[in-house]
Amino acid sequence: MRCPGQDMQYWKPGAIFETECPQCGRPVEFFKDDTARKCGACGHRFVNPQMDFGCAAYCPYAEQCLGTLPEGLAAQKEELLKDRVAVEMKRRLKSDFKRIGRAGRVARYAERIGKEEKANLAVILAAAYLSHLPPAAGVQTEAAARSVLEQLGAREELTEAVCRLIVQLLETGGKDSLSSRVLADALRLAEMEEETAAGPAAAGRRDVPDAAAFLTEAGRRMAVDMFNPKR
Image (cartoon, rainbow, N blue to C red; front, side, top):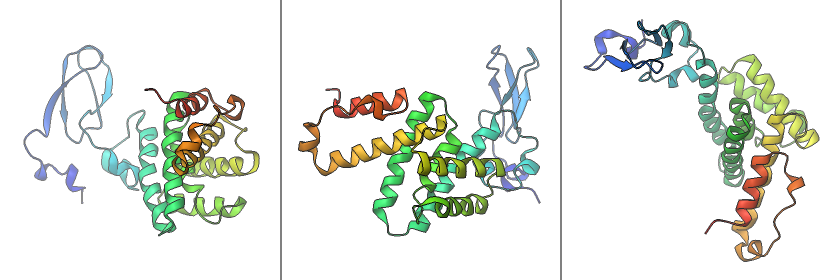
């Protein structure tokens, strides 16, 4: 049995459409379940611009359903996994709203810094959420993170990278890799935001934080902007 989204009997008008080739601008016909097609004019192969690959983030049968996933989609699939990681993290933390809020702030800063530093967002964002799972120490946190990722069907390579990042952050404070530097800066920025919210008048009188405390250029700039917001 095919996924209903890919079964032609459920298709509506517009399921077969034309889109411009991003390389040469010539029209290329797509069926809605095509993952990618090659332009007949210039030979450029590109991903279906209207296809929703969201289910591929968690469905263990994605490749059987969608066919061979196009180049670049594997990374997109892993980045989409962050949403399910966030949901599972909240489910496990239950009513610990303080920790849930902190994890969300760290993930938000990690995404901003990671994009600018061209880091691996799939690994960083999963670690940003899962590093907040209790208990918050060493191998136990790593084990909790591994449990979540295995439950969600993450690739073994991704699981190992996330767990390694969590250990690096806890043991060395984020100086082992680009990913750990991004996450360490995101944690510092989240703490600064919380301090500012707790006492805005006092926070406004603080000096700009020492640039050496931040490990990425993007993190340093965001810290300065936080203390000197643009008017």
